[in-house]
Image (cartoon, rainbow, N blue to C red; front, side, top):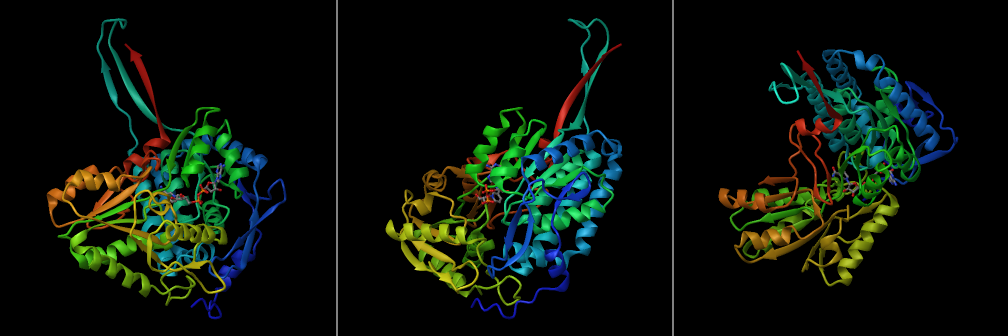
Length: 501
Ligand code: NAD
């Protein structure tokens, strides 16, 4: 299963991985001040594939200074049409390198190659082009103010939307390139400058992107990339008093630390955090759609996906066939290295993550849930865990409440038609990111969608992701929204200018 003999890495990928990976500061690749390195591993083989510089507080300060200087330099004078063109050109450059970028993403993150292609071409460059379109549409209002009162004469006020300033972008490892682009695209469209801190486990494609940006015509210092650990580089960036906004995607635990760190200069913060998302299936649902839909909802990216539908609620009349169908699909996934085109289910990101997932599986067993498939590691190289399904779930079990971030589905049945009671079960978690409702009855579908406390609910599919659809969490799943027009707003501030004639 995890036979890795046949995994072939292209010469281009080998050359890139073997090169000296430094920090991108003020348009130049520079060594970290500490001289320390971070090893990077292929989660499919456990082999070390590269090492990157370990940025620290001093490196973050240099990067923030470069971003601050660039904010009011040439970048601020570039007309919005040209800013849009630069983003579109960057998307074209990414498209040109797509096969290599996808290969690097697989080696760094473990995702299957087809998925890496799809995510970069289908989401990454689409996002850049979408936000390129917004660059020319950022505009304020004019507000007629009545004469009289304190104003003696005619007066008008207009508002300008200005870039929020220097953005610190801190991203996770589960879709590394997409998250880099998701932070950069709206920030650059708005005219901000950025210091990007990729996840220490998956820095490679962000660094490749850095070189594309360096050659793209985007002025130096507009995008700076500091690889480093969360507790050092990430912590320094979120505390830095010359950073105007932190755009963070990651765990709820670290999200809370980011909020605490923002207090120093009251920088703005947006947070895209964890999820424990419900998939609610009514008895009239089309099982031919529900079964593959619910299986993908949970097992996509090996469950290392904030939107993963890991809590399945199925009406008792169809519980057995739905669960049997998902089990059959789970057992049919071909587990193996992402570069093997035959495989469609990759490894978890690291040994730590695998241990974490296995300990949740053990806790499910210990708490009395029934393990109906999976629950095991696979092979002796690579961090593979079989897709796992539990039934006999109670809402207060650890596996039913906490985000596992692995391929573990908790299936429960319900036996009434009281939508509010079903929603109460679905909402019984501290998260509120996404969810889905499966039924042919439009009233039930929309009522249930309203009752689910989440930033996004899909009907008869799960996790609708599109650059134009706002996405973000309620409760402890986050603050603010990304994607769409709403995703641009946090990168802008409003100035009101009033004139008296
Ligand atoms: P993480 O919170 O451990 O790390 C995320 C980033 O924060 C990394 O770059 C890390 O280096 C950095 N970091 C760690 N400690 C820090 C600190 N003290 N100060 C500043 N930065 C710090 O998360 P992860 O393990 O990389 O990713 C998995 C988590 O991300 C899951 O909880 C998942 O649900 C969440 N996630 C959310 C979304 C979303 O859009 N809502 C998307 C993907 C992942």
